[in-house]
Amino acid sequence: RALGGVLLGAAIAAKLLPAVTLPGALSGILAMNSKTLKAPENAGSPASPTTRLRRAAATAVRPAAAIVLPAAAVVALGYLPYVLLSRSSVLGYLTGYVAEEGYETGSTAAADKNRYALLRLLHPAPESWALPVVAAVLLVIVAWVLLRGDPGRPWRGALVVTGTAFLLMTPGYPWYALLVVALVALDGRWEWLGLPLAGVVQYVTARAVDDGAWVGTLGYAVAGAAVMAGWAVRALRAASAPP
Image (tube, rainbow, N blue to C red; front, side):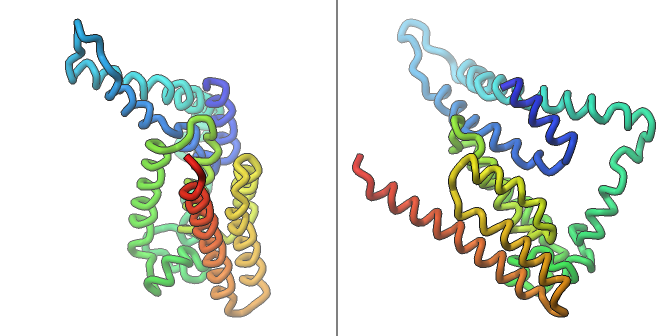
């Protein structure tokens, strides 16, 4: 776990995007917590509810700390020289980049760059409310991964969180989705490969067609439909499988 945290921290320090995979690294940690709460006690000395809660918290915190602390330490050490030399400018152009790409609340660039393309199908101007909605949906997905994720397949939870973020935010640069490609290669859920393809479609048509936003929206809509279809097929197979 510690080595995984170190490697994850190095990836985050090099490119902030891999931070979105952190919930996947903690897959199922809350499920382990609930198992501890339900664990039977010795008849002679039953534990109090407070003791059970403490044990459950320790069960959740220790494995999480084994990943999060090394990752945070690597990021901190990697950025320490820049903090000492540049102080507040350590983040560089990040805040300006976020605004330029249309991810700032109320940004006029969001429509021009077709950000939140799928949310835009629900409302033509989601710029004022998109970020809270995206944050709320991602929190639900992260909670599901922490509670129901498979600790033996952390890349699966990472793929779900990362893919959902891409569907909600519809970035215009397809190379960001290389992270999705890597996670698909680990997990084998090929339906998520529609996301990088949608990014390519949006990137190319935005430069080749005068009004190509609808093409990018269609690409992400098809990608989302493919993900839902894959989920439905797997659910049906699981339901029909013999016990």
